[in-house]
Length: 123
Image 1 (tube, rainbow, N blue to C red):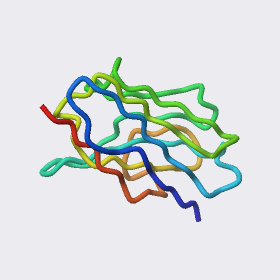
Image 2: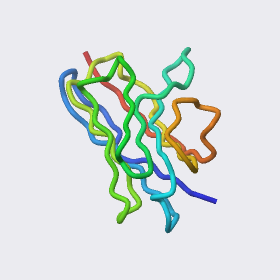
Image 3: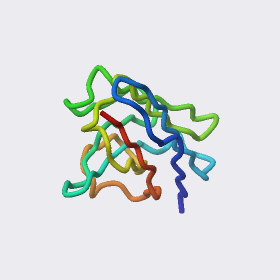
């Protein structure tokens, strides 16, 4: 089974930047599409960004488009989420998730999940 570990969360002021990392314990991470999801108190866990196994296809939620960038380094079994121009409404627990096959925006189609990393943006 694929094990995923997120890192890079923390406290940042509005307008600042953070880079999240998702490291996978699998030798063929290139076979998996990966999504970043987030969940704030009282909200559902929704996709923020996703990337295909090849890196050739990406998805961004409207709320983060132009501010966040997803990328992957399959040689390092790692996916990144660069978050710029952060806003207080970006405050949430961020989760990395993976699935075999094509990129999906549906939470229920992801088979493997990390434990999450807290991102807090102060105003």
